[in-house]
Amino acid sequence: MPRAEGARSHGEFGEIRLDRVSRGFDGVMALQDLDLTIRRGEFIAFLGPSGCGKSTALNCVAGLLSLTGGSIWVDDRRIDELPPERRGFGMVFQNYALFPHMTVRKNIGFGLAMRGVPKAEAEARIDAAIRLVQLEAHGAKLPGQLSGGQQQRVAIARAIVVQPPLVLMDEPLSNLDARLRLEMRHEIRRIHQELGRSTVYVTHDQDEALSLADRIVVLRDGRVRQIGTPEELYARPATLDVARFMGYRNVFEGELDGDQGERVAVRRNDLRVVGIPRDALGSGRRAAVAIRPEDVLPGPEGADAISGVVESVEFIGREYAATAQTPTGLLLHFRSHQRLHLKEPVHLRAAPERVLVFAAEEGA
Ligand code: ATP
Image 1 (cartoon, protein in one colour):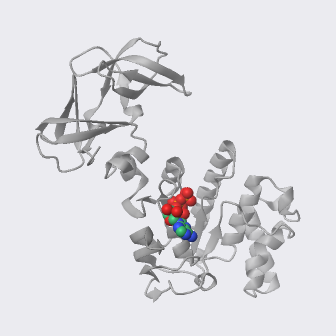
Image 2 (cartoon, rainbow, N blue to C red; image 1 turned 30 degrees about the vertical axis):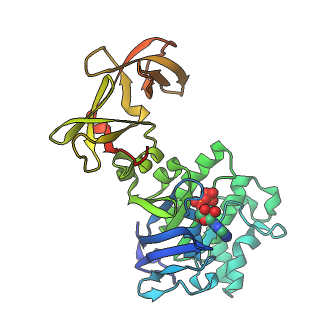
Image 3 (cartoon, rainbow, N blue to C red; image 1 turned 90 degrees about the horizontal axis):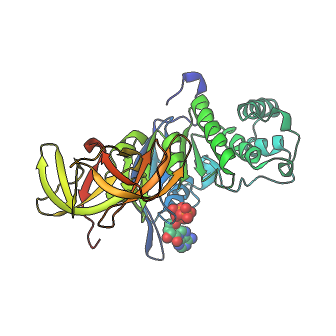
């Protein structure tokens, strides 16, 4: 969120606006009509599966790719025809892109030297950046003497030391192991909270996007599927494929079986579930149900339960992740606090407010 006056820099702005930003490669659209306003201090994640256009979008903002349509504005100044260095955004890449023959301090200070920042001021800014990423003990080392996580900290310090109006990060954690990835995720959040720099962060990892971003832009096939806060995307995905991407692993189709005010029922063979409609649903039409495994729990037998037998059980820490098969062959993912046995009968329920009902996909 926006910071106090003292944290402002030469790069301050009100908002950065992407207006129908598009990029094609030989007529194939990698990104189409991206509309987005990035507010000062906001952390935006571009999220989507491989090939959805997220790096293309980031590179268009950075100026590494030219647009084939649309425009980009910093307040009322159009910037999409400026080369990357005149946009002055900070970049952090997956592969760090550090100079191997330069010390950590020299790497971090490189952009300041290029901009002709006086030496005393540059030294003070490098000190502040090194402190911020907690590398005080490593300033004289070469990148090759650092761990992957430390190298990524250098890359982050180098990007922010020039006080850019916007920091762009392209999957910065994907070369790190799982533990370090978590640690660096906290670091990136902390640094963002401390500096309040607007940030655009590309990832295919929904947990990363959910934990870091103020708003998430979900892309698929070069188009925006949904823009929203993590809470909105988690609880109210706009489409079935956003729901799938947000961890709604149980997706199955059935016939609409009446509505009850705010809720609709869907019948599939012998089972019936009640949920919240997310699309306009005509009666008698086919519908798709989406439920997270975390929202399906075993309980007592009853007409409102879905019965099945346990097919797999996996201990995941606090609880068990399990699957059950219904008599008509539907496989449901659920959670259990108790250890279950294979082939044991279970009776599953999901609270209707956690069950989303979409129009069935064409041709599904
Ligand atoms: P990943 O996570 O795998 O990097 P992404 O979501 O970042 O994927 P992009 O790299 O933006 O995806 O690519 C989007 C689409 O544009 C893909 O279909 C890709 O093949 C295509 N594309 C990207 N760069 C080029 C290029 N230089 N020439 C031709 N096609 C390209």
